[in-house]
Length: 392
Image (cartoon, rainbow, N blue to C red; front, side, top):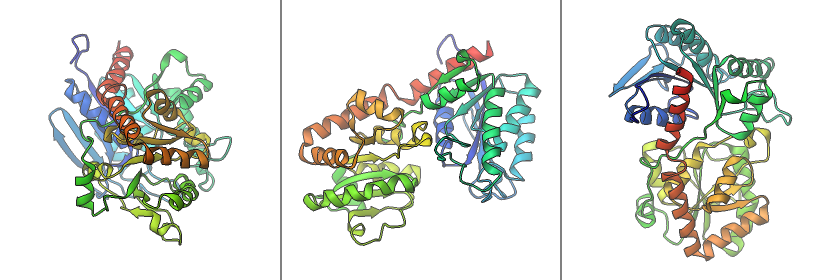
């Protein structure tokens, strides 16, 4: 632990199911805080427990999984479990913390966060990682759900960020939105997500393919995630590419799109399906490059996809849409190709297929970013400095 940082007890409140979405932002932060000598309680939502909670402890990290009964309500989405909400409030009321860090604005985060601050008198830091409510183009994460959900989501995310002592944002777009709400600039800190460089390392591509039964001659473009709308914009490029490069395939690590078995698309895709995080390095290691397709929407311009850090850590070139902050990282660090049209993407893949030394150089640049600029150790030190500023 840096000598000028006192030991802190930190409460991290996450709205997601364990292993989903911003859970990983919390999880990697929690692990690094503990390595730096701090005590952390991370509260998330259980995947399996409906009524009773589950908790585990390792060193100075306590992980609580609140029960998930009615947490995944169609009309509302996650974060409103009728059992999880009161349990969380009771759980945080029992302990005293130096910092409360609330990740997102759902009720299962907002209510215990406000309660803990009121009981402990400690600073409340609120993280903003996604645009949930109304946008100019209708792309907000909850905007297309039935009335009154979009109004509720907009009200919640604006209320909790205004209520916070400090706000952390994952992107410049969300920082700008925080400032537009009238939150003082000296209380807003942009801190992106990092790369899990310890958990994910570059692996030998031949060994990985042998284990997954993928032909060595395949040129495999990896995609991680479940954003089907973004993924579907790749279909035309794949069809064009395979006319001159039939060895090119798309490996989808996550739920496949509905047209994955359609004629002309079926042979171009390897649908791996959902993969648990401990097995992810094997699947990433089987890929020649990765693709990050993002439609140009308000929601995507203000995101920082978790998969970006995984791609960097795996040490392969990244084919990134020219949307949002991550495109700037790819361009500035020379760790891939930034594209804004179908022809750009096709040319980018062709350049990687035909110039292996250049592709290898981009892969090494990806790994350098993962170990340096976007290492979770460095990102955590940024959070830690904010915590001490807030507590002083």
